[in-house]
Image (cartoon, rainbow, N blue to C red; front, top):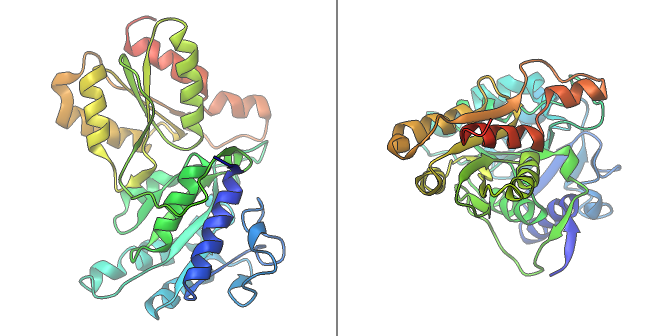
Length: 325
């Protein structure tokens, strides 16, 4: 199977769906001429000139106009440039986009997608490095997708582009250049279906995005110590695939949840609660969470490494949950 980058998979999904459906258009900051700050729209340069639009720096206007366009029958894809700056347009998202379908009793369709980069990069500091997906898991009314591979990026995004509900897609900055197998034939990945990236029998690690790869690294290291780790990539936070997680815990009897977002109040707490409520009798040890320390992301590379978790933190948590440290 051919291999393409995460970024190319996104651009390919956009190209295929925009070709199929003339109501899809996309806009945001620095996408029409530049191809996006991380090159995600480069496959679209020179194409669909009337449906790829550069905007002023005004997230409230970008998100608010996406709402209006969707209600009028279009399928807008609004880029948020950096996840941190979603907050400047939060009223349009949480008070309008997330509520319109509910407030109309489902009569109003809202086929819009918000997408863009989140997570750490190299010394991007506090305003360009945060993972904020948990907030959108907490407030009802939007589907939350968070792919970790080029295959998942394309399949999930094509599903998002055909959804009649609003979707927000978080794409980790450090994954854009990562290559992986993506079939040339058309495919879609349904929301709410987690992927077991690695099967194991001793501990379940539930994770997403960049931490999928850190967890897989940890699993390879731990295998040398005869610890067999099962790694589950949720792929979507809303809807959440509880069944795959619970089935795994019933097999391994141990659970670690690993994410880059803050450990305090992170989405891992929700997963831990679900397992505690629905599979407590299968646990042989307390559930452990791996996440960022409760501070903003520093500019300093050593401090960033200290604040944000990696495979070593997953290794420690797995050993701790097994009572080996």
